[in-house]
Image 1 (spheres, rainbow, N blue to C red):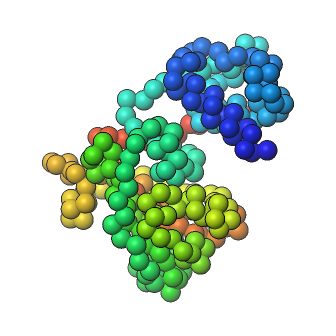
Image 2 (tube, helix red, strand yellow):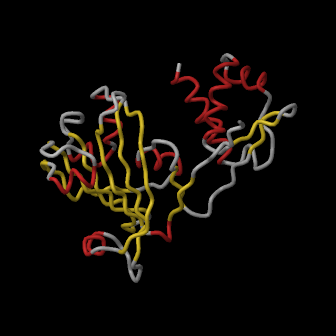
Length: 240
């Protein structure tokens, strides 16, 4: 079950982040982990596989599984996986607050369709949210959701987690996300809604998210004040 290996992955991940298993140390053996978690070897291997994909560990032939995680100096968002802001908040303990600035229904124009990939005339739910961390407004999220795929978004849902609502309440399977990261000059809206000071440029993450049927259900632009964040990915070299 995903819930089982995912729970084990999260527990080991938290232990690594808390320094129980420090950088360059080895995790307990597979046999010790299966005994500790009262689970099968396959479940442990799946949990360790996720840890590897996320850049926490590296299996070493004949020795075990070495910890390669180092605590980042800045708040880190994962680029390679699909993670909601709420999940990132829980993972790295941001203790963030979300302010819903806009929640309205719009129709995709030709310009919107060209920019996002939605069809012209498609009904969309526009959500704009400001993320405050330690009292500072640091992130502006502009989300467009296909209304037929994710209906019924309320301000409370937008304030907590739209992904959790879509998956748990609507049964939506969020499958794939394509992302691009750029650096863009701050707009007037950015300066109105974010605490920018003398910062002129933002790190902008644009993403398209598809469900299990390959239907585009969301297009998001997340605009970050760059001095507080870094974006991390983990790559595994493929041997030919």
